[in-house]
Each structure stands twice: as structure tokens, then as C-alpha cells.
Image 1 (cartoon, rainbow, N blue to C red):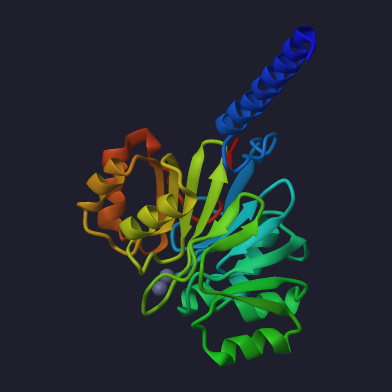
Image 2: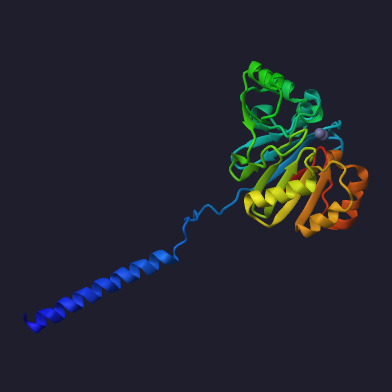
Length: 274
Ligand SMILES: [Zn+2]
Ligand SMILES: [Zn+2]
């Protein structure tokens, strides 16, 4: 064979091997799961207390219970309904929030100071999906259906809205779900009564989201031991807004320890996260 042709074949083979190697190297440097690019822009979130036994806006009514509205650029979510729908709807009206603008309701747990306002709310607006712990009794499921609203039973963690997740039903009784918002500033954790333990909930939320930065923990902390403040600091919780069933003793201790990072949360309080 002509030596020139042999050299040409050798060059072509070597070039082929070179290209193959380059492709393999390229493959090896790419992550296994492609991370969605351009999805990093997180929405602005506004939290509005519409029901609490602590008062911030004196035009509003307080009562034992908890309800907070989470406003995203896409929608309004009502987390818990307080114990009395008249108080809930009257506070919402004074804050300029139309009940018809709410499409999703999340109920943390079975206690009346969280679910008591649901029936009256559904009589005003039944075009909603209610996310309830799956352990809820049939009577509540029947009531939601009778009011011609929809319900979704929650046991495991899942997405509720863009950037908003439920922890899933955590152990009880009573079984309880909390919300976790993946905000621009870090995780925002919202609890109803924190019956599964506020520190446990923060730990669970961090693990579920695979994120370390906790910007804010807000809601009822259920009279925790004062030592939980040290655990909060160890968990890297930046701001706290304890209200409802936290108890004055623990609330005052959080206020002292957190200083300017303590938020006076109560009915009428508006927190913007941007
Ligand atoms: Zn409770
Ligand atoms: Zn409660």
C-alpha cells in the first residue's frame, strides 16, 4: 500500500480518537441533574396577619387564633382561618383584602382556633382549594364538599404554589402542617400552633428544602422552652415573629435575644420580603 495513504488513515484515526475523548470529557464535567437556569428569580412575598390574639393595628379585632395571608405576584393564600369567620372577614375587609381573591386555603391542624373560621369563609367564597392534613375527620371533609369547595389531603411534603411548600403532616396528635417559602432572603417558615415542636419544624423545613439559610420563622410557637432560642441561633434563624400561642414569657425572651430581628407580629401586621 502507498505509504502516503497509510499516513492519511493514521491521521484520520487519531483525529477520530481525539474528538471522542473531547466529547467524553465534556460529558464528565456536566452535572447529572441539569439545574434549571433562569428560575432563580424569586417572587416578592407579603405576609399579612388577619387573625391573632396579639394586636398590631388597633382598627382590627383580636381573638384567640391564627390566620395569615401570603401574597405572591401570582396569588393570595390564606393560612388558617382563626376561630371565627365574622372576625376573620371583618379584619380582611378593613385591610382591603377581598375574600374572592383567595383561591387556596391551607389549614395547619384540627384545633378550632385555626379551622373554626373555614365554614363561614366558604359561605363567602367557595371557589377555593383547601389543603388539609389527611388525618382530618370526615365531618370537615364533608363540610368542605357540602359548601362546594375542593380539598386536597396532605400527608407528605408538596408544592402549594410557586416557591411555597408544605412540610407535610408532621406527627401529632394533633398532626400539623407548616408552610415553607423559598424567598429571596432565605427560607420563611410559617406555623399555626407548632404542636410538633417549633425547633423540629425548623429542622424539618431546612432538610426538606436542602437549604441552610432561614430568614424568618413566624406564627404560633406553642409556649416553647426558653432554651429553644439558643437552638434557633444554632440553626441560623435570622428573624423571628412569634405570636398566637407562643406565650408572653417565650415571646419576651425572643424579643430580648433577637433585638432588632424580633418582629412584633399580630393582627394587622404586614411584612414585605423583597
Ligand atoms: Zn393547636
Ligand atoms: Zn392555636
